[in-house]
Length: 363
Image 1: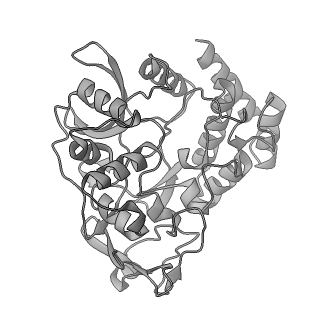
Image 2 (image 1 turned 45 degrees about the horizontal axis):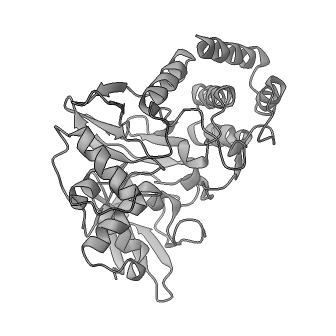
């Protein structure tokens, strides 16, 4: 059981996470980071020398920004299977233990010491072989190369299996299918991400790659890496410390969050554009972890990250996870225009966004 873990960013110590005597998580920035760094969560961890205590019930006892580093869904299953293979009792692990298994291999900027992560060659990946191993894992079968599978995707989030790879010398995420996905899921995601770009949405570079078996895989370039440097990213769920697994936000909240955090009108319009597109393609899986912000180290400000996970998807309750003007279904153009009015977005601009998104989808 780890009682203390050091947090680093590009080899500079950010602060220390520790368990208190009553097993609550505390965090404190270093003096150097307070002097020269930035707040890794301006709402919950302002840049000061005070000692912070985690209080949200949604992040395994952690602060949201550190919980963003942990895998969820598929990645959590993968980590648990990996730990069992190493004869580690997962019920004995603290949240700090789990961060140590992410170590320096996680998404975003933050790194954790001690580092128990596994290193691996991320180039020349056999996609078909990884897909088979993912299938075996999800079917509760034994995966012989569980260590390699964990090292490629142990910190990833979301329901679909993923690996963090090098492709053409750059950092990408490759997505694999689960047994619940349609057979052409890679083509579908490529199609709708391409349509999002046509609608004016900022997306990373995407690729549709054929394997040796001619199966197609969807690749998306990582925006938390730039020329080998790690970029700080934080989800809306972590910023506000809300439960992304439940309907907890409205797009009014996301747009207001974007305005307050970025103070950038372009980002506000971008968030509105993503709302419109998600509504029009019926992407109900628009939960609070599917919207992120990145820290611009040059301009010393937060910006809305490029878009990701934009595909049609239904929730089991048949409504958008993020509501639109208080509605989760049967959302109309008037509902979307009311969101614009509430957020002082010009109606002419809002209507233009709606029409542009409709044209892109029809094409």
